[in-house]
Image 1 (cartoon, rainbow, N blue to C red):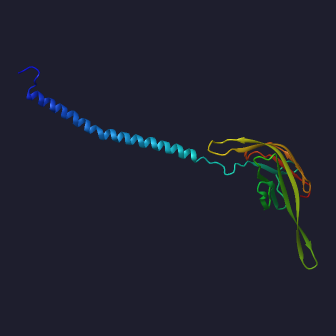
Image 2 (spheres, rainbow, N blue to C red; image 1 turned 90 degrees about the horizontal axis):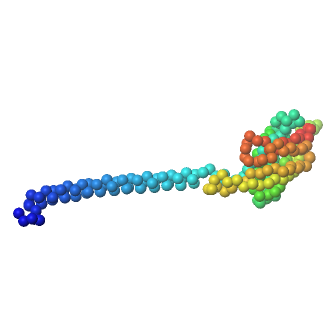
Image 3 (cartoon, helix red, strand yellow; image 1 turned 30 degrees about the horizontal axis):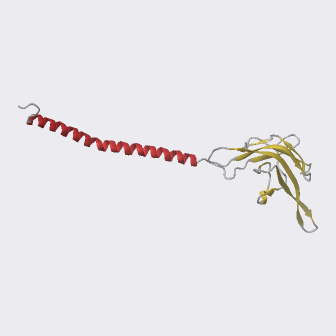
Length: 209
């Protein structure tokens, strides 16, 4: 046989080898395609999960921080107002806002503080009902008694998450009030941070209220 020319048997064997390799390559294509699709889906699922978890952070609607007022007696026992209480936030951006309306047996009171004002003004009103006994009938006369409270404070922005607007913590610097039925106010905890376990301001009433 001339050197360099392969026999039919050799050509047949080579052809069979090529056939085997070709079929193996064709069989691998669906597996490769499946792996690419599968891992692409997992990556997409992970991205969606991260985005969803970030956007589901429980951001407070208005970012307000609440100051807790606690009514006390002279022995520092918790007591309640003997008459219905109404509390109004004064001079806000939306005008005067009633936040507590004629509530009976009020004792611990949580009231929002403004975000940017240096001083908050609140109006506390109790409604006293007097009974007047006439000759033939009984009359009930209601009389409102109002005190104005002023809270001087600082405002410190606090970021809970980059997805949420900042809330504002506060430091109470001074408290003042008129004295129609309130005897005095005492700062118990000057840091206002929405910690419900901390009573920020004690309210002491005049005797008889």
